[in-house]
Image 1 (tube, rainbow, N blue to C red):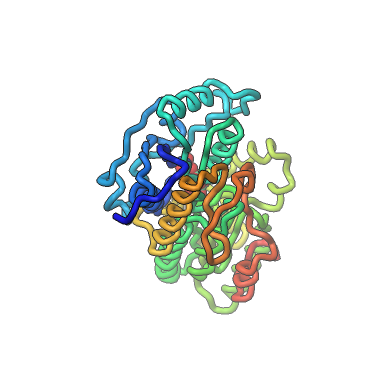
Image 2: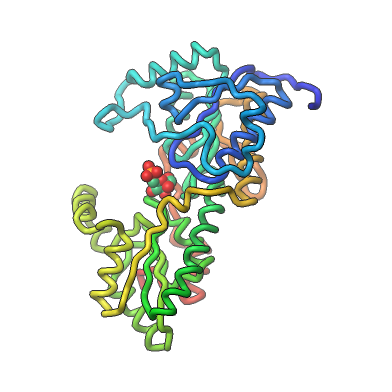
Length: 367
Ligand code: F6P
């Protein structure tokens, strides 16, 4: 252990919230190793995201707790989707409600100097709101969706792209054996980064993402053109939040009702039915689901999660609160927590990866 450096933070709490992903434990290890070894900080592990703060479900983390977890999937702290600023009806509290009060009480009772929150859009937005309520907060961006504004990539994404790509590779052989159209659904409720990147990596013939509403006639023509050119099978990659042109024109509440009635049991199955009806081709559907969130992190995610963890520990030491560690170009740094708060990073229509897909003959459902 080197010489202990000065730190503005003596004791901090750390939590993981939102959907889990490979790399979370690498991030926990990065923050804790640096905070403990470099700054001799006291570390309070908070269980199950913000719920652990509300219930004061916490424990001191010692080196034995954050050693040997680099390659482990999931999170040793547990996670939840607890939304402290939402009331029981899911509406925003107009004042800091009981849950936020409980969080503040736990924060002060444990004599925390800061909270490290590792999560997606919702987690970092809650972190920013707690910062506005007077708590010191440092955020870290995590999600397989890669849809957090302010960081050029999130850990979890690279691992999930690899899982999706492996699945698409496997589907090629069975689709070819049976001369079928196989639809594979990847996660990505609001954004299509995961479906787009895994689709390009796996050579998907059609890639449908929420940002580009699809026209089933266009899809049908593309599949029939492939068949005419001698291609006996096709792979369709669809993000779970993909929607048709018709749906994109609906009012939000009408769209929600329509999807509740037609997206059964999942968009991949509806799309498979639509394709079979449109083309008469034999079609099957597969939903990759939570496989994309499981297992050990890729090397890239381990490196990103660890280096962002060091950034977070240094922010703690410098007393630079209200910031989120971030990948900025090829460097790590930080942005104000207001940058990701309340936002979602969608795939821009002019993104180079869309042109890459089109350039190799992929149909994006709209032309
Ligand atoms: O936010 C990551 C994510 O995996 C999304 O891609 C997916 O839509 C969602 O979480 C699933 O949420 P839950 O784990 O609550 O079912």
